[in-house]
Amino acid sequence: MIKVPAKLILSGEHSVVYGAPALALPIKRFMQIEIENHTANKFFFDFVDFNCTTEFDFTYLTKIQWDIQKRYQDFLNHKCTITNVITTPQQLALYAVGFFIKELDICLNNKGLRIIIRSDIPVGRGLGSSAALITGLLNALLSFFSLSISDTKRFLLLKQVEDIQHGNSSGLDLHVVSSDKMLLFTQDKIVTRSLPNITFSLVDTGMPASTTGECVAAAKRYFKNTKLMEWGLLAEFSAVTLELDNALQQNDLKNAQYCIRENHKLLRTIGVVPEKAASFISELEKLGLAAKICGAGAISGDNAGVVLILGNVNINDIIEKYKYTPISSFLL
Image (cartoon, rainbow, N blue to C red; front, side, top):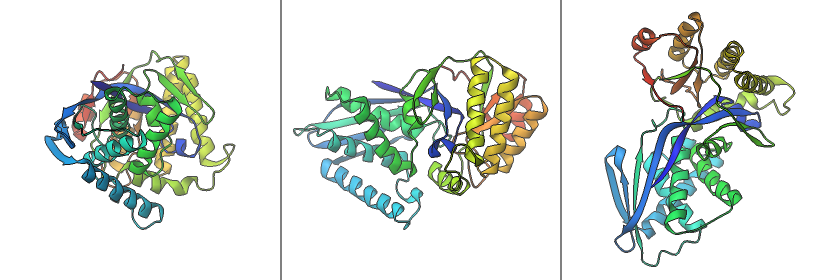
């Protein structure tokens, strides 16, 4: 069995796509993938958590891959939105398996595959469920067929699939779900970080009405004139992320909270924090806490995925008031 963790972005959502640094860590929610032998020339997918199974031959799997690639080309040509390319986690899994088999030049020799997918990563909450799924599928195929590839090729294959899902991937999620450390992700390098001795908590506000791809597309206009890291909104995101990294390495809660609050303001500026989530965060700030969304957020509806909170104050009454759900025991 292959297990891949979820991820949590502490700082750098959206801006990382344009070259700004990001700070993120894997968390204790997992995608689990098993591959077994199956009936000749047949692929059997068992999506356990969705109570969904499907079976077909490789010809049909190839057709699914071709159809999705055609829709992605339509997206690139501005003929459709990214949400039209892949609409369900099941489609993503089917596409990824077909793509990896082709790119790895796997010879099935009439072999059929049974692929079992289990996950306790909430879908659409900004926790990297897509990255964990495609990473788990690639790792499982490599293990099942006793194949070895370079880290460079591995990342390239994963990013090609994640681009199909989100439109334009920074690659951050793929690196984080493949790690067991907190990472500072920059254009030049990826640096591991020790986990700080600071109290974190997570609250699930619910699945956003908009997808990651839609949010990335909507936020793009805020960064289009910030080509240089030295000025503009991109520079503000960068400065906050680097200062947060510094504060966490020094276990400086006060400064870390300041950075989280500033990050929240920036995310509001680019329009990815719904009013209900912003109201929730405002109430937390009045108690001396700091909070922000983690992930793409939302450009419509009330839900914003997961909110990160720094500080140690009982907020059960506020969580209940907003009908949100706390996420416990998430640090690796």
